[in-house]
Amino acid sequence: MDKVDPSDFQPSTQNINGSAGGVIILTPESDTKQVYMVIPPSLAIPIVFLPGVMGSNLRMTKSRQEKLKRKDNRAWRPDDAGDTLVRRHDDPDIRQLNFDPDETEVEYYEWTADGKRFDATQLALSRSR
Image (cartoon, rainbow, N blue to C red; front, side):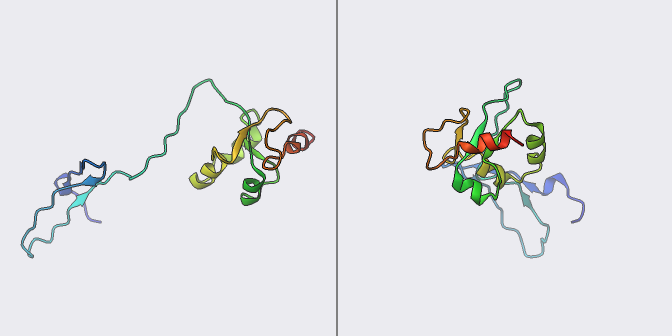
């Protein structure tokens, strides 16, 4: 791409329904100058950081554990630096699967309200390593 001049950019607007839009002006065929329009993403996934708060341990369902091919059921274990460091390079789609609220629960030691979906014994196994 050649050097882009700021005048090559057409401003985008936000329509009433929230979608992006803009005004395009027709020019003669001899005008071959490219015009660029920056369109914001259609969906934003908010990430909230609370400084000083590490949060609770989270465990994932058995089905999510199988889908991600994980040996343990850890969705989030902030006190385990090894587990946290390994996950720092996970792709966004893997992070979304890890933190899906329908597929995770707060880990209350070895107790779970839904033993069919969550395996509480994984906690004991992970501590013995």
